[in-house]
Length: 134
Image (cartoon, rainbow, N blue to C red; front, top):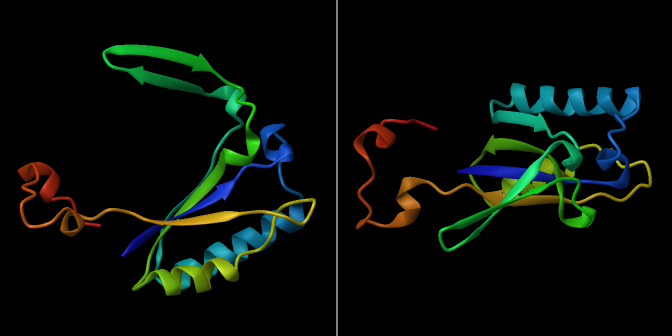
């Protein structure tokens, strides 16, 4: 099973402030543990929302909203994708992650990525897409 570990944004990450060197070192050490365990598929940080945009869909209409976005508690600052056997295992790995928040509080959301099998037997994927291995 593949899981996305979603790191929530903070006031500091939205301001574009980089974590302190000791926090970066702790995260690098954690990522190295994920690599050694053979479960790390991807790990990326995201730039602040002021450098992004949203596209709102209403029927056939598309509206572009430029960042920054104000509800920082719902924003994503980065993500990691791991491949483990269960949600319980993903939770155990997240509990080992360093807390990078300067104020001591942070949130990591864990979401299972959908696999072809999750869509049921009636789902017939595009032949080219079906060749992709995770």
